[in-house]
Amino acid sequence: MRLSHLSLTYFRNYARLELNLPPGVIVLYGNNAQGKTSLLEAVYYLATSRALHATSDRQLINWLAKDDPIPHARLVGEAETQQGKKRIELTLLTEKTARGSRLKKEIRINGISRRVMDLLGHMTVVLFLPQDLALVEGSPSLRRRYLNITLCQTDPDYCRAVNQYEKVLSQRNALLRQFQEQGGRGDRSLLTFWDEQLAQHGATVVAGRYRFIRELEREAREIQRDLSGEHETLRLRYQPGFDAAAATDGQMSFDVADMGVSTLPQLPPKEITKRFVAALHACVSRDIARGMTTIGPQRDELRLLVNGHDLGLYGSRGQNRTGVLALKLAELAWMREKTGEWPILLLDEVAAELDHYRRSYLLERIGQAEQVILTTTEPDLLPAETLVDATRWRVTDGTIDTALAS
Amino acid sequence: MAQAVPASVTRLIDEFSRLPGIGPKTAARLTYFLLRAPDDQALGLADALHDLKERITYCSICANLTEQDPCPVCSDEKRDQGLVCVVEEPLNVIAIERTGHYRGVYHVLHGAINPIEGIGPDQLRIKELVDRVASRPVREVIIATNVSLEGDATAMYIYNKLHGAIRVTRLARGLSVGSDLEYADSLTLAGALEGRQEMQE
Ligand SMILES: Nc1ncnc2c1ncn2[C@@H]1O[C@H](COP(=O)(O)OP(=O)(O)O)[C@@H](O)[C@H]1O
Ligand SMILES: [Mg+2]
Ligand SMILES: [Zn+2]
Image (tube, rainbow over all chains, first blue to last red; front, side, top):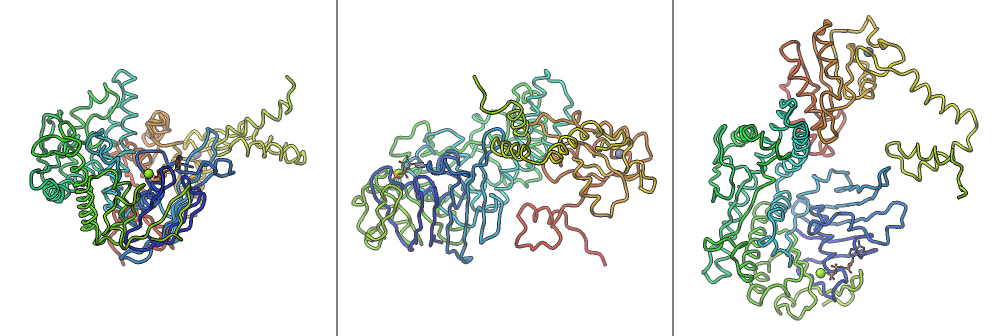
């Protein structure tokens, strides 16, 4: 699939932009702080309704818009996909309320007003960022965010479940805090509803993540082999915050770190739900004492292992770079398999981040993509093969010069 | 310090700003509008507000807002007092009345279970409902709480309190009449699929 038109109003440092995009490779070059990454972010936002990194959506609205009566940013993308043309319109509004202001997202797909959740899957993207290294080296919450965003793009059931799960979790935690404040007293039967909801949606989340990680590992392992000259075997280890496989009714092991490789087999979701409920019952006293839910996918962890060693703990910079690249390329292969077409590829500063060999490997693997948008401060670092047929646009202070093509 | 705006004007602006959905700008606009409006319009509003607080009480049977106790619905002998529809808010009663198809009576909870907001069963009129079912000839309770996590939590709680004693039903969830599948959002569609029914002649 590819993006054929992009229109931005008050998005980051773009006050106004109308852009027709050709297929193939588009190279956005220019100095730092001109708006290259912001353009990738705009495309990413249209696909996922998420900002890069976990920044708040508010920061996306251009500073100039602050003085408007209703400060807003607007993004419109037209994509050509195997399912036909899609027009995605996204408006971010800050609404004034009695207690300050709140942000509202309005979404239209082919003119029809939709929920945020229904946006996902219309336009698929895979994004390569210099900061991806944090996927290996950073905190577990980054990896959970990664799992959610990637899975949500292709699996609406997962997306629904993960959204519901988060809502139920905050309600259950609020209830636990009430019990905690009352010194453990209170009507515990009030937990029943939230326990069941948590377990039901949690089971879908866990099953989805398990399946995804297993499929991802198959691809990633091969890529790591290639990249390391057959020296390195990559494994993805899923450590669920509630391991239904290790748990039997009523009794379970709590210490994720000690469990090692999860053996979660393909348990039917009903069975996972049942065991999850039982586990929630078993640890209710501890949950009340801490005022929060201590088991479940909100504590899931995904580790990358090379030749049996945990990259997050023992990996060299180089190994970690290779691991992340393998993971992202595996995601790309997975996405293609799920959707039956190339996602739009967004590559931020890969030339600076990757060494010559990894860079060539990456660009070769994506050589057949329908559309690649990549940014660089130094276009000369890109291989000649990539530049030959590429569209080259210079980005300067929130404007894109398309006249200087190639 | 001399005040540029008289105190009674700022007071009304402040009062308006405390209402849901009204920011300081709207509050000021409303205030100046009333200031310039004819006396009977502004004082009519004041009267209406006064009456609202003076005259309106809760019905001792169904907890709906009313000027007389029991409310007109609970006092209506032509209505089926054995059929009780449980709703979250008084506005929901108006919605069901508009169908013109319901001949039973109501029970208004004044909210839904929502731990984040600190609302549990004790903050709602649930105990009153349980007492009502025990002390009056109620055959069936129809739970018509909203289709949301909180509405579902409330429905489940009430169901657990009442089932066994009497028949407890819940409104069906599904597509709205005249709606095109293409326009339905995925959550509604999923609910309609889940709640599908055997076709009948
Ligand atoms: N909401 C915003 N309004 C206006 N400018 C912004 C906003 N958010 C970020 N910027 C600015 O936009 C510029 C472009 O950033 P970026 O896209 O990361 O540049 P590049 O990738 O070309 O180095 C930066 O100078 C940044 O400070
Ligand atoms: Mg940049
Ligand atoms: Zn009444």
